[in-house]
Image (cartoon, rainbow, N blue to C red; front, side, top):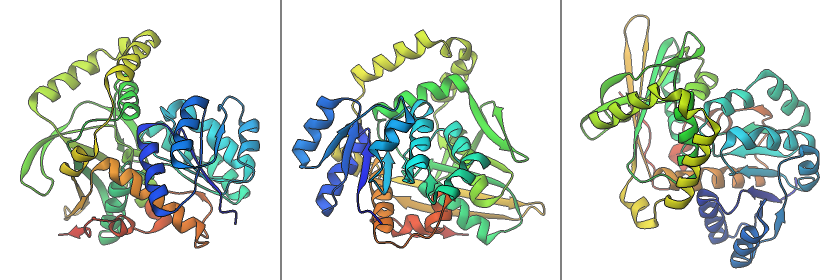
Length: 352
């Protein structure tokens, strides 16, 4: 297996963190993106090779990936960039990973068509190898193993640090699409559901969100009813409900472009001190038709740090030649249900 691997969108917030940690570990990714000045500046600083290409033509992208074993795709919003990169990876027989949390991207990547083509190409297609969705995906899988007849899965997490520019842009797109849950195996639109959850440090008011596990946890567990929650103040809940009324306006390209430009000007992502301060708590609950309930708890580093640790653990696993999987997979299906607990400074998943 080739030992070459590539980070695309390398000058983004999370991608730079991944590249910097790769350097510290003695790994040598190829850095890539469409902006030559930004890619070259980062590659020169880290002493890595670099490539410059857009994603406009998957066949040309495949030529850039011909000698590359795997890609960590970090250029969002992934709603625009994932399909051409997945196509290029299939054409070049290059393993595909990304750090998305977008439900539509997960659904496309796990479609029968992509799964079949990935298997034929002998590659893995595994979106969501960052905080979206490694911790929650592993919690979901552990809970399903503890309760194989579960009919309902509820997941949640509590963090606290600011958003990166890429995540903020994806969130703007998410507001336009509205909230999502999975009911009887189908992803459907949802209002704002509210419940009290103890994420591990006392009860908190929480609301459901359109998090990636609404898609991925179904493939990991087969559980047909899935929701994901985060802590939310009454003010936040009011704002989200207002945003749901404004969806028609939020869908307009001129509004989307304006909001994204504001993000580019004002959002930088959390610094190292902030990331160290805010750790993440992950919670999950399953129940079956008999009313039995099991609950799981997990503590991880800050979500952005998990988005560095997860991809690099997978890179090291694949470059060691240990992988024998192909097709569309979730992180827990590929790496095991307790994979998250192998990451530095992460607890075991505790079930009660």
